[in-house]
Length: 263
Length: 266
Image (cartoon, rainbow over all chains, first blue to last red; front, top):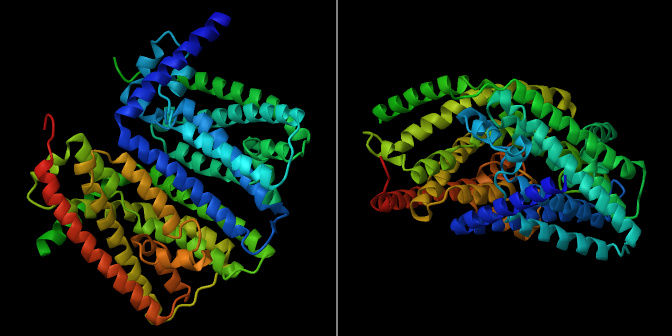
């Protein structure tokens, strides 16, 4: 097992290296993607500031809480896309063109190949943006984070990563039947709800977002940083394991029904 | 001119037949385009309960429902399609045809739109039905005419704007980056994410002089009676100016871009 982990670790390093070389080859595209990250962050922060231009709180939430939730979402999503790039959104094309066959014959776990055959190192900028915004929100709200809460936050953040990845993988697996990425794009758009604390939405929406475990993506980790720990904090790792196992099971279910595009 | 119209109608028909094969795509496209506006609408309604805004709840609901429709009517795919063709060397096929590629793009855009908007009707019908008591529209006959005119010109402006951006691919050899940037600016400046009336005044005034406002916000402002006649006429003047100058720039860039263009294997 440690040998396998080491093997995949070096594989990740290699893929990262070649992805970085690819990014540097298309410098203009890389620069524009980074500029776009700043524009997106600016746009969302601007929207949040307009929510609070005439009131200190909205739905009982302060501006700092909303900004912190957005920063955590940014950090989680950037980390996710650092490792999975657009691989899941392109899965429909990979299947349609028959390239999945080349993944299947490689001596590497198929889930790993589908998810991480390319990486997006530019997302490190987005991670940094998330960290800076989070630090600003924490200092603005004058919150002091104890080591214990930081450990709990790290646990929920890792759980968020796993849940986010599992949900995206689950949606992308429908490409085996649809051969396109529209459903993935729809799901990705829906996940943008997690940018905002889910308390801002009506109660029935919050219930739905707890069942589809989107509440764990950014709301639960940001609550921990704000010093609110509840049962959701402690079931987050369990939910992460369940969603990961379910998505992996669904992947192999789809693969059993996959027929190669070539002879 | 009649020949061009005939050509466009043929492209519209082929585009409809092609788009009909991917009906699910149209449904998902409609729902995808509705998620963000509905999400933001619900947040703004919560905000309006906490503070007095320059728009009432009814105006906010009406605005976001209309923004879904406007966004879909004025949307084009030229930057993605033409930009990709230029980068992949397939623009050569367009160059050898005995008509301008813009006619084909126009036909494709309209054809795609007919099928996709047909899918939009039941979804919007459902939303308007459940929210009918909150919808606020103040429209006179002249307002209807102005709104229709604004929508048509908004579509034309977006079409020529995206084709203008596509010609930049001749020089930059990138189209993904341009798409990303365009989409990021479109989201913010068109009023898709936030009604321009809720922006600080100085930002609103800057946005007035970008082409993005005319894709979504301008027709809605007319429909909701948010701007006086002088504002409507000023808007049309700016819109027409953009149309003329962007078309001119597009033609100049296209002419010079073709001189530089080289395609491997085609």
